[in-house]
Length: 234
Length: 379
Image (tube, rainbow over all chains, first blue to last red):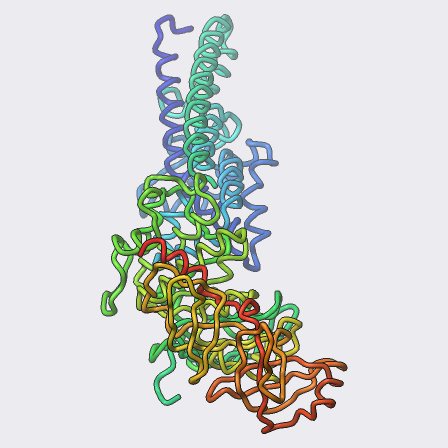
């Protein structure tokens, strides 16, 4: 049966936004940390870390979802530990959907932050050290503010990618309406039902609207950041 | 010297192009580290401020150990309280001038030694009008003034200047030199100044460290090193010369200034006008290029040369295949004269021979002269 009220649309919108927001909440700090490590640190396993971070960019998202299923699924040791000790279950949950979407978005976010960090003269941090700033203070007061345009653009990109992620989410978190069924998954489901084209079209229009909104917000934030950075940069 | 050195360095570190081996005690209020590009000056500075760790050795700031490889002791740069002013100022681009200035001031660790107040520093460096500006809106000279102020306000025990004038034009360089002179006298912070400009050395430094290819070639007071005929890196320069110290100065309106050098008069290329001599100008330094000094065995007459200084030859050192550098003693001070080997032989110049050094007053250079004259406008 095809639902005639707007429940499906609203559910899909709320699930999508919730998944994207949760995904951003854990990927952004991680992307900043990884971007900083890759831009500033030199150690033996750097190339391996770099390859691992960028792997989701070149792998089919379904493979990412499958890898998550293998490592964090209820049959896996980590999944069992999470379930039994911490009471956290990721498979078929919104948290799992956020994790899958976030891992797909991570490489692009790390890249944006890393590029932004590499544009900062590391001697500015040395100057801050000579003025008494400890490492955390230097990161907080010099590095992070100067990376802000990169961090903002990473956040928006990450949010947009998470919003539209399909393959990894459906493989790891399945397609549970009201829990993991994001807009992309809802469109897919609608297309599976005979006569569901109208719903699919409505969902597609909503997706387009949210994407446009995100792009406009990105543009506006980008301009603000650019202006701020332009004002600040030498 | 028996007293505790300000900075005591005994380190070695291998770099790509040289091995820096340095054993040095720094005592002066303003010490210049002088040498050509690639000599190891900046490496030495990086070792002092903690941006580099030595392969071996120890560095002490007063009694405080900054690094000691034998005990694995290493103080991180942010714990050293050493102010650093690099060539390109490195102002924080996202902070305006006042926030740049106060960056270190807000992070002061201990206030056991007196440090200048923001009010004082802003006044001396003339930064009042710039406080709300952004670094990108500042000229090169203004950026350097802010960087100096920022380092001064960070409660530093030592100020490291890494060629802070190298990227400035002559006018701005002179302005910043005036300010550095002012800082040296106004604030009680010892300065270590890395430079490859002898003019800057003569203007500011009390102590001089000569470094080349990672080795300390000579170290000591600037007058003693510049007055010796065999100081490496200085006496073989084409513009070799000596630095005389005048402890008294007579100023009569409309007449050239006359300095007193070990009881003898030295006419200076400065016109005394309606101005009072700032107390800190004494002792006044006068640079005498060795090739501008003429030697005579008898006191000459009928010459336009104003300065005829009675001196005694200390020693003669061959400078080039055709020239000799003659080290002359005037009391405790040393004056260098460059003469051809032929002239030296003709006159029979030898150690202990009394001679007269003839120097045109226009040949003398007073490194602080510009400052004296510009001060006069305010007084």
